Amino acid sequence: MKISVQSGDWSRILSPNRHFVCVDEHDDYISSGPGLEQSAITEVFRRFFEEREHEFCTPLYGEYTTLQSADLQISSNKHDELVLFGAATGLALIYGHYPGHLNPLLLIYLLNDCNISCLHHELVSSYLPSISEMLERWLNIGPMDSIAEFSSHFASYHNIQVRRSESSICTQLMSTIACSLHGRSEAGHHKLAWEMLHNVVIGPIDIDNAYFAAFLKGFLLPCATGIDLVDVSLRNCGSFFGGPEEFIRTAEMSTIRDFASLNISISCDLKQPSLDELAQALSAAGPQFTGKTFQDIIEDFLAGTGAPCPELLASMMDRFSPEVKTCLSGLRSPTFRMRLMCWAVTGATRVLLEGEPMQLSSTLYMPRVDSQYDCQSHILHYDVELPGVQRQHLKVITAYSSIFKERNLVVWGMSLAPNWRVPRKFGLCIHENSLAPPRLSPPVDLQRSSREFHGYIAAPYDTMSAPLQATMERAHGEFYRVLRIPAKTQLCDIIAVLSNGILSFTIRCDKPLMQDEIPAAQEMVEETVEVH
Image (tube, rainbow, N blue to C red):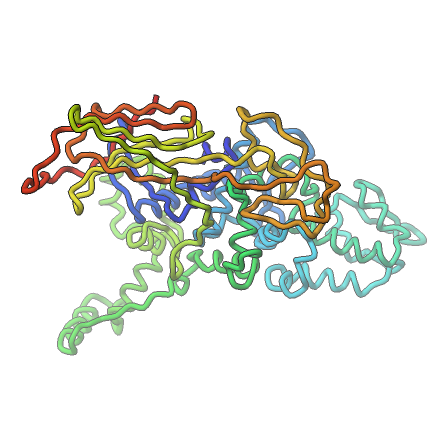
């Protein structure tokens, strides 16, 4: 995630071909697979939304929070932390995990390009019914009517004090909005209703401040191909039915609030004689078990709190890792056992909804390769065409397939987008390559007739007066190529050099196997090849 913060490209984490691998301090393989992915992502969410949420969010209305912000400049370290928190929030929604206590209306607002009009009456009523009723009362009065009943709201959310004088309601200005309260027009009266909603959901600070700008850079999860969370998951590609509102509601459904949230069915396959024996055993166990069924016992346990055997747990506490001790700190939570069960079964402390997590698909291309084998020296050469790729954006490993009895050289990485791309969303530059040529000036207003190709904006034919016309032919984004090498090849037999846009491999091979020879089975160990 930190690498993506620096590059501004989240393609690798969001790629449908992503693969999570756990290695030790020596980069030796430990485990991999979908279960590891769920565990890793769940740990990210735990750190950001349980341990550190107070660092980024502040309570605003009821149990809901908003982003901590101020009309100030922020340090580069704080900026990167906010980008990470924003990315964790976007990833949480993609994985169907609700991000902490952030106001759902705030998330819907951000997913609608920060357009406050997306928060319509029915939507506000479903989440904040008291605020919806207050806004209705505000709109039912006129610009010249008394606003005394709204004094507590303005004092709490607008920093405005409303007090009575002998003749009329007068206002003491404590913010720039205060001038709208006295002598306001009909249009100003309605506009102030939107301000009232804004300050309850987002806060009194404008969305353009440095804190929200950094948060949005991560939250949108922009990819080098030009797509982001809004484009792919919600609107342009129509990959999520129902738009931002249903997207957020789906994530809310994953939160475990009570036993009903688990949405599980407990089946018992015991025959009637065994059920009769169970009923007798439960009756003998005490009045708290009398009349209970097998399903009742399971439900009662999951809905219970605390440790079933506190003394035994206390005697073993010093043997647990710090991570386990941290998890056990929530032992008294009414949902602890339910979350623990989900964690054991799925690797996530939440309800996993049907189907795979949503994915932001980026273009995956296969670089061209030349190969040559010298039968006398038994030297194998591969030349992989990677123009413009830098060493830090490249990964090469060896991997053995026990099924096909062959060893492969796997090359993957990221070819960054050209840096003359037209910036989009909120004026943020998705990626800027510091080693590339100077940035060219973007085209003049391309108007609504502009056409987008893979996230890049090309000027329409009727804007030939623009100073720059752009087309896109070069391949970029994530690439992947698998090269076969002899089964007995060791890491020391491979020399990899990246020069002038060509990744060259020189591989020292043993003599080829004869037709009747079968390669011996080897361990499925992944090793990283150092590129010079």
